[in-house]
Length: 71
Image (cartoon, rainbow, N blue to C red; front, top):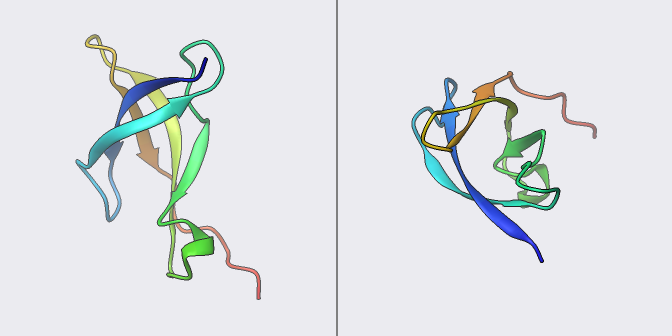
């Protein structure tokens, strides 16, 4: 059974945005992701790394810059 958790972005172009993401491993969500996804064809993409979890259970992701896009 796949679960979902609430997440919030900190810093970068999507600062303050919150949403629900999958947590495939026992309430532990993805370690990092890019927003928007490079496969969406938009650039630049902002990378966010899992940072910590607030007392209310929301996972926070810290802005980690723009990943290099391979051509």
